Image (cartoon, rainbow, N blue to C red; front, side, top):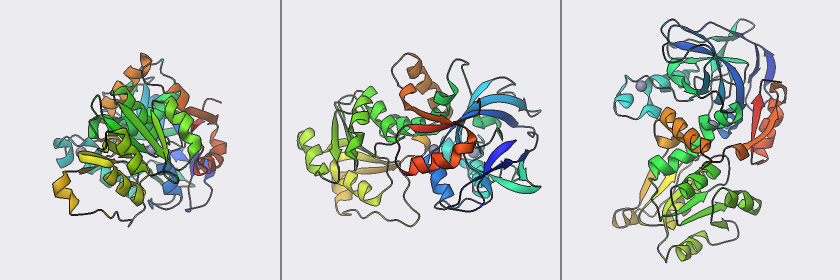
Length: 367
Ligand SMILES: [Zn+2]
Ligand SMILES: [Zn+2]
């Protein structure tokens, strides 16, 4: 199969023929139809998250089941699926604690660049190639754990389904599962990107009185408002804390979602929430970066800081909720689909993401 292999950080991926082994007992071979280019792929390619090399990146994807291992009962050939980048085993400490996105079995596999049994199905010129988050979708096919496949209806466009596999669920879940945003809340969202617009959209849908979008680029105001933001603040030129207090009767926001991972943004969110409010940290900071907070205010303001990974819930359940809202016209996913390109343009797609192009570029395999 054709795949994009990353051999060195900060270099272009190489499009080449890669062999893919048959799925084992509880694995599934999926023909990839669409895969988004996400910031986590970019961080990996830049060496920030330091995945093992060589590796096939890509973790936001959809496709059709091609073959199943002998013990697979969940999906069958021909099923349309979203791939989950945090498949869970159901049997470890965290799975029993109902924190499936923290699954130990998955964590060990993802860290080692393998599937669950510690081995790889990918090879180039007979040398093993690492898996990325048990997905590796920048390729025509992927072998994934059975629990990494979520069956969807046949009429959902593959591009839309792919986006639900990461950015949409991350932003939606941060608001619904972690912020537990309530009707009448004032919600701040920092970072109007692939995740941020979904947090904005979900907060508006959850009945927020005001959704305040914050970015350093004022050109993002239009898109933020089109997904439900009622206000837009430029954090380079405006006093965000003062403005948000003015919006919420002098109190500060009820919830703040940070989608940037920048330490100064997290500190700003902490300052900008009201007592008893919560900061939801979604964006991923660079390794070793620290956030400074006024420690004496933690007890007496009862402010909370909550980490949110992959929407903080059960990804597969949330895929279904989001697609249900999409189907009845309440959650707009069609407008999030940006340029469609072939695998041969993947390095360009990474550059567009770096340049801040907002709508998601999708690598599609039907052309
Ligand atoms: Zn992602
Ligand atoms: Zn587990």
